[in-house]
Length: 91
Image (cartoon, rainbow, N blue to C red; front, side):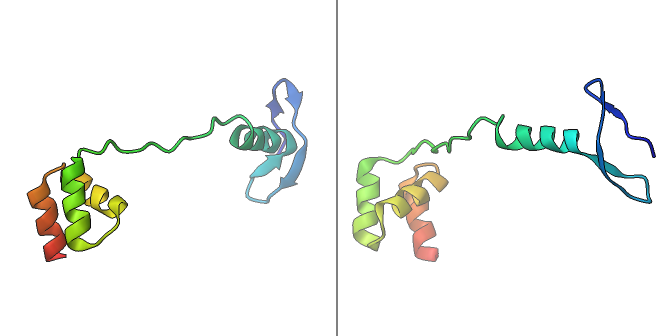
């Protein structure tokens, strides 16, 4: 199988397989450059917490769990203290 033109140049074929697939150095370098160097870093986004401070304090004090866990439970239940407490009790 003949190598295809890439960016107006003939691609250097690194490996040609019997089933017709081939890999070119230029395509591999371009893909690697795109994946590694040209990507913008992805910033983790924090979910907005719909929990009131008093609700978080109640859960932390009563269930003796960390503040982060209490905020997570409240956020999962839309900031509804009653639903969060039921979920913690029912496990």
